[in-house]
Amino acid sequence: MMRTLEAPVLVIGTGIAGLKAALSIADHQRVVVTTKRSSDVSSSDWAQGGISCVMDPGDSFDAHIEDTLSTGSGLCDEDVVQAIIRGGPDGIRSLEALGVKFEKNGSSSDEYDLGREGGHSHRRVLHAGDITGHEVILQMVRAAIEHPNIQVLEHVMAIDLVTTGWLKKSGVNTCIGAYFLDTQNGEVFAVQAQHTVLATGGACKVYQYTSNPDVATGDGIAMAWRAGLPVKNMEMVQFHPTCLFHRKAKSFLISEAVRGEGGILVNEKGERFVEEFDPRGSLAPRDVVARAIDHEIKRSGARCVYLDITHKSAEFLQSRFPNIYQRCLELGIDMATEKIPVVPAAHYFCGGVVAEVDGSTRMPGLHVIGEAACTGLHGANRLASNSLLEGLVSAGLLGEKLRNAADVLEVEERLTIPDWEPYHAVPSDEAVVVEHNWNEVRTCMWDYVGIVRTDKRLERARRRIKNLRNEIREYYLDYLVTSDVLELRNLATIAELVIRCAGRRKESRGLHYTLDYPEMLPTAEDTVIDDPPGESLNILDSRVEHHG
Image 1 (cartoon, rainbow, N blue to C red):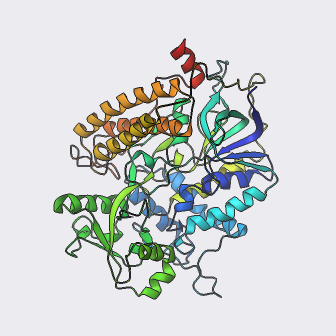
Image 2: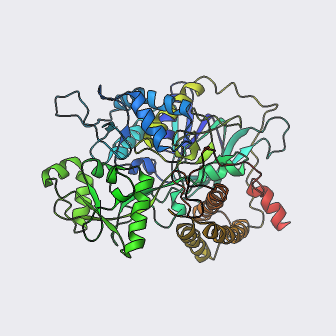
Image 3: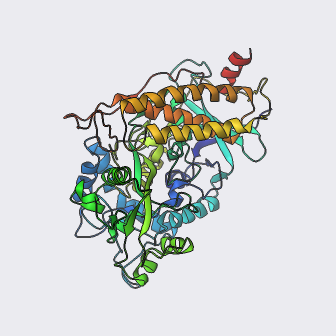
């Protein structure tokens, strides 16, 4: 018999969105929270810069809203932007109540030490040194583990959602939980819940070079798509302009806050170049800066460009950026006296599962928040440090909705998730196939669906990813599931969705830039993919069909 856990609310993911949702609900309902690694491993934990929020009397909600809309290049939903930005101060206070300490101007001051980043017209980025995400997640994980109404399951990976449609039940297709793989012992089990929350983060591991941790494989987006939910604006992938370029450093980000404090991008000759693309220079929005760097590298044949903040003292840099300063020093770079070599890297998905500001989707029982969701906040390009803000506020709104709603969702009959059945699948003896396909997906996406795109490149990518998805599907059905196979399956799905969305957008807007259509169309429209995925929703159906 397969083990099945039951809870009113299931939250998948332990970034800022998932933890905030769980903590917001747990005083009223029991919550099961799952994470495929340990609880503190997430993109939120890696966030350096901070959380953008209007906290300065000289700033205003209207100014922050305008900066967000301007950066989003016409694709933002203004109502969502209003709700998230105006909800920011309450979200910050909720973090402080958990013990998060944001930097102040002096030990006895009540005034926040606010940073400024690209695209912002004011200083409004709250930070805890240069490891803001880590400090936030540290306190949130502690609070979740200590809460008597929260059960945290680590090292378990979601396989697929379970819906009444898949169970062939009549009525509206409703989510009733998910299957999971215990990655430490290989057990497959289920969690049955009246409300399932996907807070699984983004998918930038689909690219060869990324600033994200290894967990960012788009699991929630892929699962929601297989379950029948639409996705939107998947072509809008943000490439962070300044990832450290060093053979011994993997995915180490040089925070945008360094440019906010006066860091200037220069080429090998020490010449500024971003100003040729935008008068704001190094403080232009990320899409502009990333394209400028990409252009400069290709024009000059250089392997990287440089971020110069040597006009600041070592004392200032050690105080403002202790983690970055120390890491660079360990690699032989003294940022007080030497320019930092940097390159762009895939950083954030502005697209995702179509969801409302509170995580609602068109499927009862299923909610999506954080980077996995496309609410309309970011539009065609995310304003710096708006990501943690969105996760915090949207999760809080979802918590308000679900606190007393877990017993409201009804289905026509009492349902039980069926036992997992592997049929004729056997343990894999060809792990090299998974590694090869993993590398091929990521290389294909970097080469053909990167910062600058063309129709020809997209078509090449479409053909190759289609073949890879077929190969991966065969492997998935023939062998027992492992976390590597599940992540590869999800990455290949994400790759196809990005390519399809990119192929539909016949213009350059925000993060999507194509040489075939360099101008922006006068009307901004979302790219929505809403058709059946063309495969069985769950491995149980698939293996019956595959093995007979």
